[in-house]
Amino acid sequence: MNNAEILAHVDHTLLKAASKWDEVKTLCEEAVRFKTASVCVMPSYITRIAKMFTGLNICTVIGFPLGYSVSDVKVLEAKTAIFDGASEADMVVNLGFVKNGDFGGVTREIAAVKEACGEKILKVIIETCYLTSEEKIALCGCVTEAGADYIKTSTGFGTGGATMEDILLFKEHIGPDVKIKAAGGIRTRDDMVNFIEAGCARLGTSSAVKILSGEEAGTY
Image (cartoon, rainbow, N blue to C red):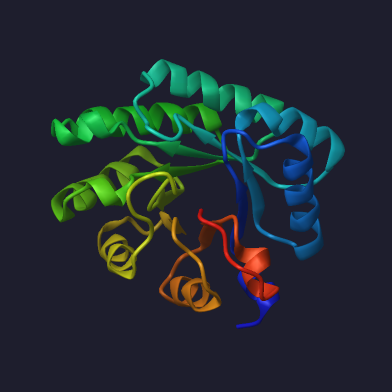
């Protein structure tokens, strides 16, 4: 697998709270140069990016990073992001619902956000580091039933990131129309290749360009 093939799977990411426009602009320039799948950025920069980088695939985050916004707020975030120019949204599930066993509530929330996204792509972050195997399996069912496009491992802000064990668990329990995004802790070329070969359609990382240029990886 060559570098271009790897980068075509990458959501080139910058989600640090104090990120400046110059950093975001550099991220977008890199995405254009290296033909990454998208840039994944905070919602407040979408409009500016869309005006400057015509045709760039913009991904953003919803209910990020903790997931405990009320459902109506997540829906509004999604509608606003799509209106502003995003083509993809990565939402965080409500982990309180999960821990209370309210998987019906999780499914309804995902379905509502997907409806807000329409034909645009919705990825659902389940934050695996906080979950039991049983909860992960149940969430595979929620994501599938709600009609989301992807299940995603992690925000990159939790206590752990993507693991091969979780990717293989997802593959066993998601529906045929759901794809997988690995994110968090992807720090080497081998990590990227292994996750792609295991079936991940997307990788969320701020470090792909640096890794493939032989530089030190970042933290997301």
